[in-house]
Image 1: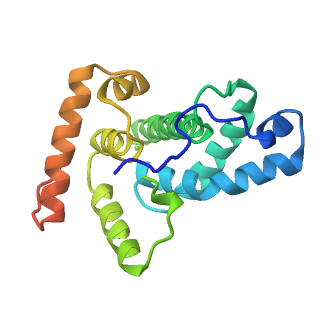
Image 2 (image 1 turned 120 degrees about the vertical axis):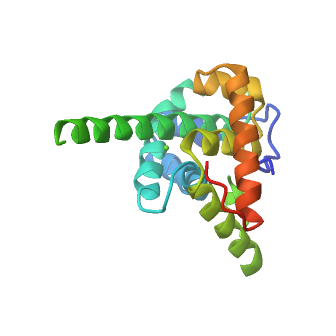
Image 3 (image 1 turned 45 degrees about the vertical axis):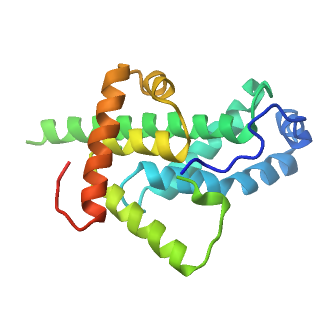
Length: 189
């Protein structure tokens, strides 16, 4: 279920990007407004529950805006921003887990954003997200990067800074657990 992205090849640069880099607030607002649904859904796929998704999506949009000067236009803007969102979200999740671990030790972690389908499709996506919520973070992240963003195993290994075989293992375990959950099994990850 790769993310639909018609501009995967180098396309003429969006004039709003250059305008936003130069400080044009309206151009930046238009870019972010367009990116918001995609970013929010990607973040929602990466985290458990909806409570933190909006805050993380906001932080990810800020990272996209700050990173605009580094966008070279060699690939699609959507793909570039997806990677910024993933890096930002995973870094924030890692920081949050580290902070929770410090607190607890002291006191005793797809994009279907581009389509607004009918209710049945929405319900099935919600069910999938609920089932993803039950997976271990590592498996969930590997599945989202591979099946939602269409990243290859080597790309995921590079993105997450883990060995190639670890990614393959997480994908296999995550797919098995998700399949069992979707079929009504109770396999825990």
